[in-house]
Image (cartoon, rainbow, N blue to C red):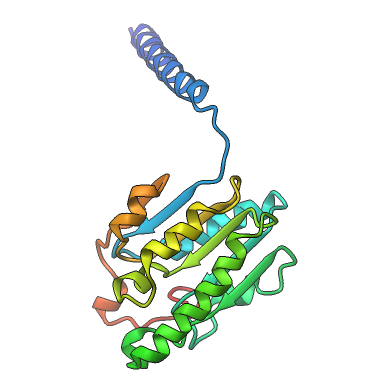
Length: 204
């Protein structure tokens, strides 16, 4: 009795997986285009930059060249900077002066943002970069430090095979309209609200 029941369950599972495989195979067969993609990682949850750097690490594993511009993490050396800064295939630029609520200097923040985008624009024109990561760029549009339309022109005009990842809590609608992949990280709970301070290796 047990063997027959187990055999029936196994057959149902086999048929279910066969149907699923057929659907997946059909989708793979239809995805024939190969080009650079624009990925947006947004939301108020923790892990957007971590996801972006994880993807970059994957690209480096394939021998690809990467460029990074961090827009507002300039006051304290982050773990990702310390880890990747000496990698031969990574050009890493930290162009901010800290979070905007720390600097409290709008003109300084705007100048830093423009300087950072100048570096980003050069990378977007250089086909030797396979993947670019613009960490916290979305804040530059939220606070109107950079013109989103001008930046989009640079992103759209990049080399065909170049990938771009942008992180930030909120993401401008104009960016979302041209994106290929958009993922949202939700905030369910955070240790900070339980009185746990930010710690090296976890928050930076």
